[in-house]
Length: 307
Image 1: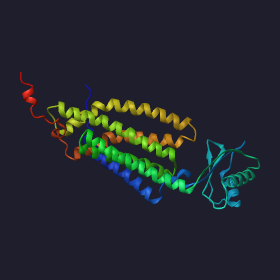
Image 2 (image 1 turned 90 degrees about the vertical axis):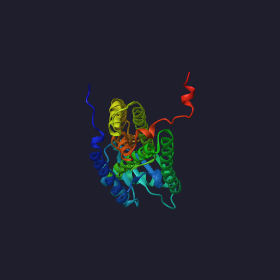
Image 3 (image 1 turned 180 degrees about the vertical axis):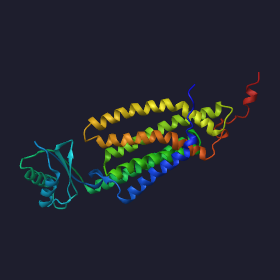
Image 4 (image 1 turned 180 degrees about the horizontal axis):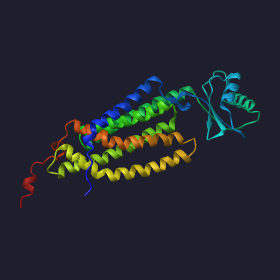
């Protein structure tokens, strides 16, 4: 028989680890924030391809000389392709802005580049997307709180929502610390992380509730440890198969979905960890007992059972 792992016996160590990650995430978000993409800030994005490698320093110098000193330049997919981002400018249309950027960039490369993509988002649209994205996160958390409280018990609801907030903050902190671009695809990944982590937590909670009703002996900690061990193989298999797909997307999927795959990868790892070491210990800390999960007795059931 496989020896049970004492997950809850390590909850204090897990609490220190989670506290460190959360502190780092919050400090980074407060100090430098997220590197928001033009989906949220508004602006123009220009993608240009060349036949030879692009020196980013000379490209930035050429754009500065042409008056685009606020341009952000980076390689996109390969060293022969560049992605240029510009903040909104009054008095210049989208076409004029993209043409001016492409001309300055081509002069720096001494060749006519292949203008592959031009995207423009107005600042008003960016503000609306920022507000709507934040509201989507808040509404999802509130809905989950109600659902878990109805399905289980309020102590489980608080534990699950705290674990989800833990996952979201650490994922956002990861992007803030590394200053990776945060756009609509990454926001979609964060919302997907909430769903994935909640599903994992619900599976664990279901088994805990079942064992509280079936197991006659053992403390609440022992029952919850048994439940975590019983769901461990399912949790590992689900997470590993999901991670294999996400790693393939991050490596082979190209720049368009790279950050999306990275956000999901971080979220799946943290979500799996939190289902075991955050959600369950928080429920235990609130003093959950067998009485909290016992089905209420309906008056008259004993009479109906009589012959």
